[in-house]
Every structure is written in C-alpha cells, then in structure tokens.
Length: 335
Image (cartoon, rainbow, N blue to C red; front, side, top):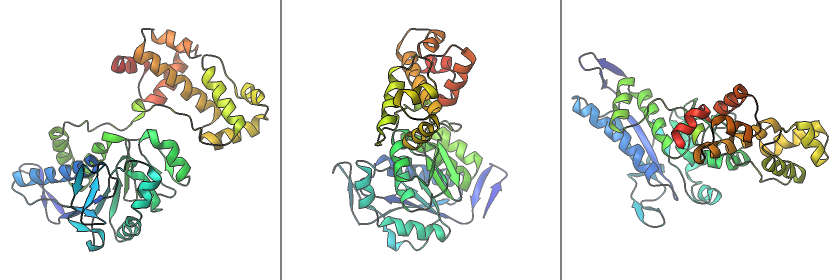
C-alpha cells in the first residue's frame, strides 16, 4: 500500500485512508478540531514532499448542524453517519457535561460504529470519549484508558472493561483509547506512525511541539478514593485511613476497627473501592506526600516520615509505582 521514497525517506501514497471524526452533541470542540488539524497537517507534509495527501478527513455527525460549547460553537459536518458507506478510522472526541445525558444524546452513533468496526474500520476514542466507545460493547474484556478524574465513574458504568487509567494510550484489536485531556495528541501521533511512518510521526511531533515518548498520565493523577457505594463499614474504614495516614496501618487493625472479619473485610473493600486495602493505604499516603512535595519546604525524608514510611527504599518504590517519578523528580517538577 505504501512504499518508502529512499531519496527523502517520505512515504508515497497508493491508497488514501478515510478518517471519520465524529461530531457528537455535547462534544468538546478541541477534540474535534485537533485531530482534524493533525491529519490535515500530515497531508500537507506529503504535499510538500511532492506526493498526494494520505488521509481523507471528514467530520461526521447525526445532523447537518451541531451546536456545542454552550451554544458558542456551531459545526457543520461534511456527512451524516448514514451517508458513510465505509471508513478506515473513526475518531470519537471527548464529551462534556453529565456523562449519562451525553451518552443518551449520542446513542444513534453506536450501531454505526459497531457496523463499521465489523467491516474493518478501526476506532479511537479521545479522553472521556471512551465512555461512548465502551457503550458500543466493543471494549468488553479489553483494556481502555480515559481521564483519570473519571476513572471511578467509568469502572462503575463498565465493569466488564479493564480500565488502565494510568496509561496515555491503549491499543487492542483495532481499538484505541487515550488518557485525559491533551494526552490525546500522543494517540494521534501513534496513529500517524501506524498508518504512515515513524519519520512522519516525528515530523508531526516537531511541528506540534509534542513529546513523542510520553506513555503515562500517572504523574498528573490525583487519587480520589471510590466512595460512591453503600457499604457503611468500608466507608468508615476509608475515612479512618484518610485521617490516620501518618500511622502504621494494617489490614487486621482496620478490619477490627469496623468489626468485620479480615477475609470478608478485604473482599468487601475491593468490591467497593476497586482497590485492595494495601493499595488504598499506599495511594492515600502517596497523595498526601505529593501535596507536601508540591507546596512545602520539607525534605523527601521528612515527607516520607510524615506519611508513615520509615524505609526510604520502600517509599521511593511505591512513590514511583504510583506517579512514574521518584520523589525528588516530582518535587523538582511541581514545587
């Protein structure tokens, strides 16, 4: 389909790829405009090199006119979705507002997305566009990323999808998802490289001033324990952990604190919070440590002791596991 031009290392187009960028109601405008800009910019790179454009980019909607951004922005899609016989790549932009209401207003897209996927199209969601992609059922049993702030809501709504919310990109069986907010640029670069070449992706990364190697949103995440459940004993345990993060906490002590047998307590805690007890304790301690490192003047060791760690190696390992950075790197970047 493509061949490398050895003179300038630019790929020469033989078959154009069709990219359908959805224009849902309640969409975030930038998540429509940015992918269009990316793929049309790559077309310009090809034209500058003396080749034909590689992508045919079209905006696809449910109606001829879509008003978004609280009425400030009007978009006129190129086509209605039922006018698209076949496409190669579907981009699902991020949605805004109440997610249940947003999904309800865009349900008409779902069977079309499924049908196009079955006919060979690939599908990529940007940020919380993952909610719309997951609503198709295509992500069942597969990995998915989305904005870390919406992780608990996503797990609750789609328990049969493996949420890898720390990831910038997931890719599985022609289905792609990205992490929160601007991290979708990394997915767009990934798709450019997949469909064209590494050289073209690097060119795009330089043009848009993007870090081509970013693969985790862990350093940006703020842990908010899942409390949208009705298990009162587990809520009590969560509140105890958050109030006593500087103490040495054990599963046995917590179970005794709320009057539940240990094994039952562990099972109920994981079901209610999507974390093991130990994971939850670690995440609370590290979240407090991050705040100290961002705003205070204490040394890393002082912060470590404040949140209940006495082993420097253990603290650094857990901190890096959660944030993707060492405590010193984190403080240098955010303080």
